[in-house]
Image (cartoon, rainbow, N blue to C red; front, side, top):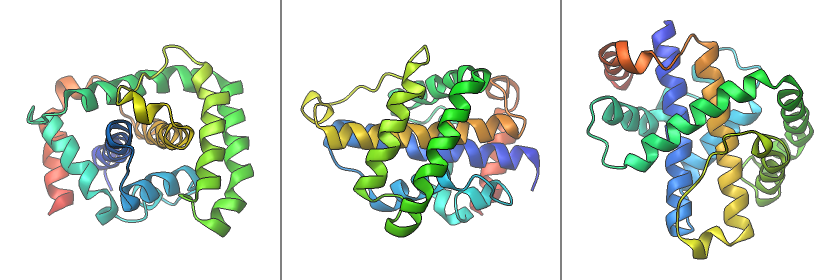
Length: 202
């Protein structure tokens, strides 16, 4: 798989996770399968390739379509694009803070056994990931700000799931950077990325 394909897979994974952040922040409800794909990716630290981080290509169809819409300026959810850019900026800070990155890695490994037994989307695992995000990534600036319905954003379970999904989005952003991604891609390689998405979606 080429570098550009790896990059669009990672960006698709990030947007797929962030779409669930937007959904749960607005409605209090998320979709089971995309959430599971996102949270599973957090624990696949030693996956063989980018596609394997998300299980398989079919698992990312939603995210890849969102990315294609964004690249073609047909994405109606402007807040999703802004959230994505905020996570990409956060990744730069996160990757430069080795102590925080190591703390996150240790925390994920500590939760891995529980995730194996119960599933990555189990409320106990989600709560653990949410706490890990709050104790580590949330200390970095600038923080990723999630807008939504105050009624739902005041519920502990909703906040935990949002934080867990933000951690998954950050995982994808790190993967994107590791595969050679940079913000210049959105200036100079939009058509190439869109063509790669079309090829992946068949």
